[in-house]
Amino acid sequence: MMDSLWKLAGLATSAPERAPEPTKNVDGLWTTIDGAAPSPRSGHASVVANSVMYVLGGYDKGQCFGDIHAYDLTRREWSKVDWGGAANFAAGCASHAMCVSPDETSIYVYGGSGPRWGAANRDKLLQFTLSTQQWSVVATAGTPPPPGYGQSMVAIGSKLYLFGGTSGHDYHNDLFVFDATTSAWSCAAVTGAKPSPRYKHGAVVVGNDMYIVGGGLYGPRKGPIDLFKFDTLTSHWTEVVCVGDVPPARLAHSVVLHIDSLGQPALLVFGGRDFTEKRTNGLWSLHLPTATWTKLVGSASEAPDALVFHTAVMWQQRMVVFGGTKEAAGQSPDEAERSNALVEYCGVSDERHWVLVASEGDDA
Image 1 (cartoon, one colour):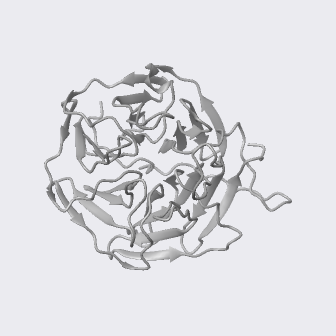
Image 2: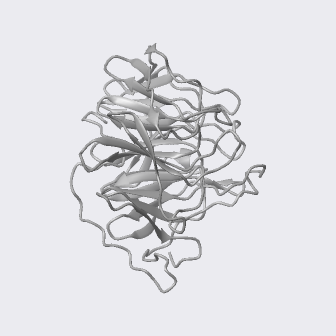
């Protein structure tokens, strides 16, 4: 299990067939999706395997979902996945951490919680095998992470790296490592200035480094968003000092790795909320070699809703955003309006624009 080279969830090594461009209908909306879309939700998780985006779980109106939906990025088609196996996910959960195996045959999930946030936290590492559509609980040894939600999980080499999260009361900044060669968890002994305790941050992998972007306690701190790099070869944390148009601190945003036209790595950060609970539909790019932030400005008519607790994946230079909460400050979780809209941001060459692929009320 997981004994070959890991890669970042959502980035394929092969060049799959390119999806056709959506066609515009008479109302100017992009509505070329087939199949039944997932219901509106937030707190779900999404990864890409074999040119398919898998959406697991989420929350809406007092209910956590245990379903899995597959969106074929080439055919632009939704389908619901019928699954069996371990019942741990059947009750549903939200704000779980998730990544995909290097050969894109399995999805791994850790943590998450139920509608009674903090009272129904999960503490199992689950494996979903795509070929059999079966869940199983991974047998582990060592010192596991505490039960919780809002963590991040990435894969580098033969190891999983799980950072942060909350119990609903306490917030964490420990880094737990699962070694697939020994099936054991450990709390990493690290050096350097590690991030403050936080949840609902973003995490991406570039080579042997893991980047942690933003996040915070229930509300993020004031000031600019922070960025930390963890070198998995030296177990050393470094806070990255950024320049340019640095966005405000935020949590519940999405972060994906984008390779620019020069072949250099950049991060795309979309949405989230700041310390005033104001949500945003702003999109920023961070050029990693120079640590320079740029706000990407597009047409107001193209921009999607301001979202929190949504997901984004990267596929063929397109950032695909799904779901999320369109909540306003002061609303309770059950009062908030959630989305099942699917939008894409195209960042190929000089062509940069948003595309509404399907939204609530479409024949999706």
